Amino acid sequence: MSKVDSTKDLIKQINGYHAFINRSGELISHFSRSGISTYISPASLTLLGYESKELIGKSIFDFCHPQDQYLLEQIFSPFLQSDTEKKRTTFRIRRKEGNYIWVESTFIIIDSEELFCISRDVTEQKVIEEELKANQDKYQLLVDNLLDTVGIITLNGIWIYINEAGKRLFGTIRSEEIIGKSFIDLFPEKERNRIQECMERSLLNLSASLNEVTILRQDHQTKQVELKFIPTIYKEKKTYQVIIRDITERKKIEEKLQQTEKLSVVGQLAAGIAHEIRNPLTAIKGFTQLVKENYTDEYLSVVLTELEQIETIINDLLILAKPQVEIIQKVDIRDIIESSITLFHSQAILSNCEFIVNINFKNQYVVGESEQLKQVFINLIKNSTEAMPNGGNILINADIVEDMIKILITDEGVGIPKDRILKLGEPFYSTKEKGTGLGLMICNRIIKNHSGSLHIDSKVNEGTTVTIQLPRVP
Ligand code: ADP
Ligand code: MG
Image 1 (cartoon, rainbow, N blue to C red):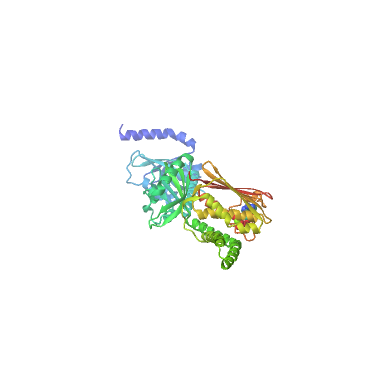
Image 2: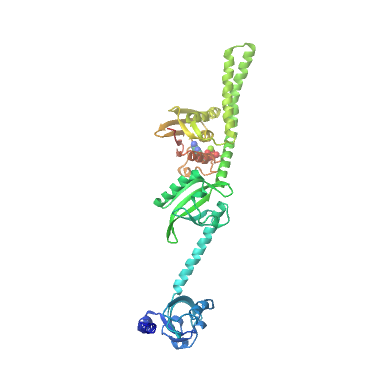
């Protein structure tokens, strides 16, 4: 078929469709190559508010929105080849009432003289599209300004998007330093396995998170972060969305709080300990007097024993007060419990509390930091003595339960109302005049860091039991 024939055929087809299209509410028009309309279908009345005859002979450019003129200029360009190629464009056109509507028009260039055009009203779609776009922009703005890092990485672990916070976190201002690079390479060697494992886990569970991960910045600073992976679709491809929260500051504050609480406990214990030291000192003084007058080995050995007792107490107190460098090692859990109790001897006597201790094992170890674990027991025992102002028993039971060490600290004190138990562990929640409300929070944190659990059961006016479980070294 020649080109002319095929064009004619097309026109025939078009005319055939006229009647059909007219009913469907679409506007059909013919234009000269300079944009003057030669035919406008009756739909112009509903669509544009004009009778067809009001528009015939007018230029389309007189009705087109000034900002969209360029779109039509491309179509009505005299340089455009006259062939049966279709051109589609969406532009705003002015109605008789003066408002603009969006129309999507398909132009068919028939020959060097004429264009044929079908238009439909797409205002509603356009408005929705624009709202969507505005929402998307808002969302983008939100993501860009989040304090947390939000990024998209491919299933192969390559960055394809990172927000502003992310660039700051990794110590760069240029996206190119991250986009296209490997995600995992931003983490030190030792962290990579568990990150990889977490990413894989997220694919199965919709999301997965990791706590306390170290990152490597370009300036060789390290930061502590939390990671969360959410499998997502980005630009029609399966990807991970990653959210990274910088917890470096929070960790610092937690450490400071821990130190504050420690000093406060130490301060409060000091008075009792002074008392504790006075007893052996009195004995030492007395026996030294006796030695002076009447030398015997027996007296001297009493003096030595009492001196050793003082030494133990003072050492414990000093170690507790000093900020510690964390030393993770195997620690004897019995030693920890017993030396924590020692610090309370005098206070227990003063407040009429009695310790009943059953540690049903020997030579059992947990991996951790002994001074931190001691702090847990000291905080808990202190709470128990404080809960029994008129005295009572403090039961300390420790057992092996499968691969855990289970320690129960039970008092017969005032107890904690149910609704308050939920609040425990929040900082600064205290019912005591001189309380800091930090004790339990720190216990929780230390136990969590040791991969253990801490649980509180309590009945008002009956007493409280704190259960701690720690994994034991097999
Ligand atoms: P603080 O002892 O400085 O108040 P904690 O965090 O150690 O802070 O304890 C918070 C609160 O929990 C206490 O003020 C008290 O109300 C309650 N509490 C903790 N342990 C016990 C307990 N053994 N018996 C009764 N109440 C307790
Ligand atoms: Mg306390």
